[in-house]
Length: 116
Length: 113
Image 1 (tube, rainbow over the protein chains, first blue to last red):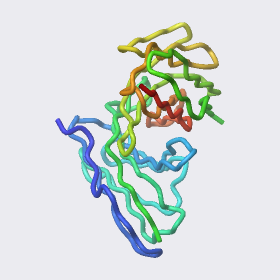
Image 2 (image 1 turned 180 degrees about the vertical axis):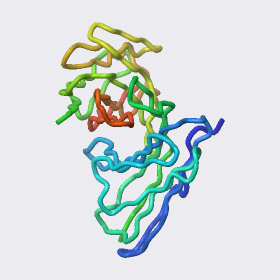
Image 3 (image 1 turned 135 degrees about the vertical axis):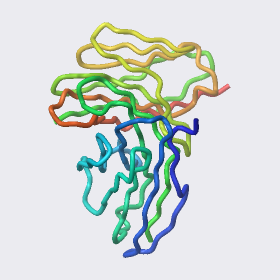
């Protein structure tokens, strides 16, 4: 089991460029999440998908879009990158389909994005 | 608003010098509190889940405890390989779908031999 995988590992963009971050999990989990991590701040939720076919905004969704392609894959798209989006992006997954019990999230290795 | 505060921001210990990391939280109904370990350049790695005040969990040199307002991660006789950032997160009771976590900023632990 690879767990949660993310591509690419590193990316440098110019302001205004677009890109898609890919995430896949092989644990048959229902829920998937995208976070960003900035120095001195906790991980902040961008978007999540509680089940295949559904997506919802998290704490900091502006400037991002997501697609839950199937049960395994959840992508994050930056349509017009800005320097404020320079960050480390983590994808996570968890088993629960509904928020009715405590559920552990498992994280991928991250994508380090720099926007010039 | 749900909040998590971790202290200290950074901690330097000598090998074998025991200490504790603190995670204080305010949440509208706690479903669970999580501890993760994060090595440089890696994603967070799950350590513990605590569900209710008074609960304790142990793993090797680590012991996590929970009260109604805070959690402690006790490190007994640490080794250099325990050096990492330790993250605390809470999961609140919510009517919405999705098990959203609120994270603290983390404590950076350095253990010198």
